[in-house]
Amino acid sequence: MPLLSIVACEMLEDELVHVLSTDLEIKRLFVVENRNSFRFVQKLKSENLKPFTFSSDRLYPIVLENNRRSSGRFVKLFSDIPILRQIYGSFNKKKQQELTVVVNLLRKDLHSDIDNLQYEVYLNAREMSQISDGILLFYGKCGYSPEKVRDDLHGLDCPVYFLRDDERNIVDDCVSVALGGNDVYKKTMLLGNGRGAIYATPMWLSSMNETDYKSTASYQNAKKYLSSPMYSLLFKINNQNCKDNNFDRNTSEFAKIFDMEIINTEGTMDVAINSYMKAKIDIYESME
Image (tube, rainbow, N blue to C red; front, side):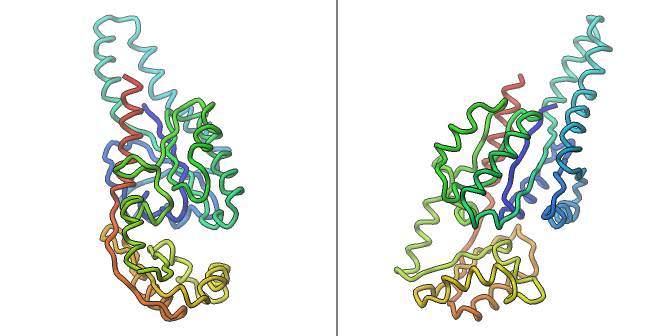
């Protein structure tokens, strides 16, 4: 059974939940248990998914053994009997259209230090490559060179896939993912007519759900640059597939705190869906 691992940014949590909840070919879903996985797992369960959660040191051996057992016992049973070999061939082809997915969701505040972000993505990708037929990096470029990432991860035991837009460009960041690609991102920027803008998604404003937002590190970081009068626009990226009931309220409160004008714009799941499907199809084809 093919195995796709996903190293994902917490900021793209909603996109990943949508992608996984619409894939009926996922046979087993595992999530690395860490300090920021609880909300993600709850969202998966709300979409009727049943993820298995383990710490990384326990999860990887379990996944390896699970996949080995599911195929090995049939090979041993059928290998010596010609007619059963044919049956196994048909069975195995069907098994190749089922998928095991392992998700490792990394915390969004890694972006405060680009070097540390890159280190954590590399570290987790290398660990997961030992159990994977392919790895999808659920990240944009986020300040680092995709060429360098490709070079640094070239020696892994499996291919690495990236979030790409319709022009096959690696997306700039989570805003580009939410809007549908780099070109859409650039066109949206032009709507500001030179005024400084912030782009809001439900996850980007999720820290607003804290009891006292103004005491959070997120508020302190935002205050450092949003106190400048050049930042006066807040692009609210709406997406009907994101189910955060607090998004409207959080957007209004954020705009009020920093004296910003809200501009509504439509988002899409296309980048997330298409990139996931490309990785999945490539893995299927490599196993034929």
